[in-house]
Length: 346
Length: 170
Picture 1: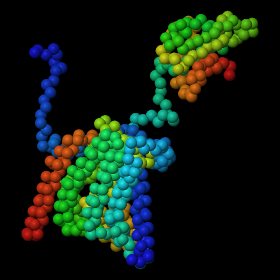
Picture 2: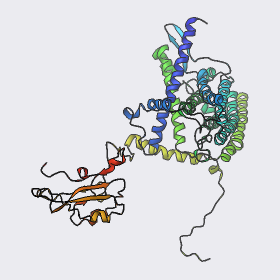
Picture 3: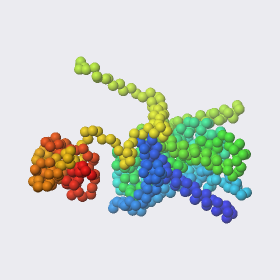
Picture 4: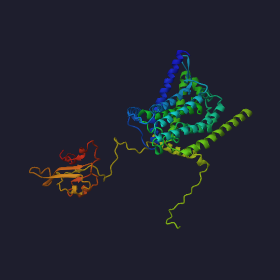
């Protein structure tokens, strides 16, 4: 690889890292604002115009707070927990194609950090590692409520990962590839996968809610039953990392959903735009479209959170094992049958 | 048993049907409700918040706030230190020392006796308004604002400097 290519990749890595941090930061602000609007309130409006500087203030507060490590806690693991949570959240964005190939000064640039041929598997692997952060944190706290929260998180993530994987299989049967780049390219223009896999998408989005520990599946952090949840004993920025990791996860899973099912950076009329806007500007419009989709999903996450009450634990398990997994398997069979019929007769 | 009133309702617990068990119709219904609120609040400013430091809620007319010691139409202090307010105070928040009016002070105090020291402990006061009712001279009213906050207990003992109305000719 040339030095210039290496440099471009490096810039891309830094930019994506910065973007996901900023998006996560402003998700906390947006969450409070959206919650306020859904509940006839005003929300943060003190720091800066419309409270725009609120995330900065929150961040400063998090860093300034006293850091408490319980005496009986396992010191090393207590620090590893939140670090692992935020690390696994950050590395998921490496394989997401943010835009089509771009030409700057005659050089073709891929707007993707790396296009590995097992992209989806990589994402699933990384996402399932995220539960270690929660589990280790809950265990290291030496607090039975934290441990209960962590165990809930683990069992919930494992249960929902199964149906998530099964819902993806039906999609893979249609696309025939694990590379996210190729999956996006196949959805050129209007051919978004959600049109061919509506049930699969429904299962996937429900599982994504459970995987990111978002309401209505936010059982690991249950104030009434578990004091706080797996992060009861955490304070200052270590708690901040856990909360931040949740928002980065939300961003990445929104990006994955947009990429897999909603056409990624594709939009109707993109060929016309590409012909008129040139090979430098058109990809940027594609990036903007992808981000619009991502923000729509993030808003949907928040909208759901402030509407639906939390599931009871047995209901959660019931839904995961007895409803979603059979549905996902039925979706696979259905997809297989229809694909075969189309191949035979059309 | 014969029902005493017609208010009794027999609760029927039916098993959920398929669509109720699928959650999704109920979820979409809930989402549409919250979305209505969102749209209303973003585009029509439908929130009910009073933006406190800039905007204050009007108190009702019979709100009982900080006390004030009144002057009469000539600017003389009405209080004659009779002690009825202190006597009627259930929290024993009011203390006073009476003094005799000297020659040349006729323009300051209405009668021969006046309160040289008049103190209300705002930490003890329960704002019941009994002092107001007990006063035969219409000298004390609880018509002020909320008592402001402070850091030391001693600063909550309000003397005449804080309680007496400002003179008329100012």
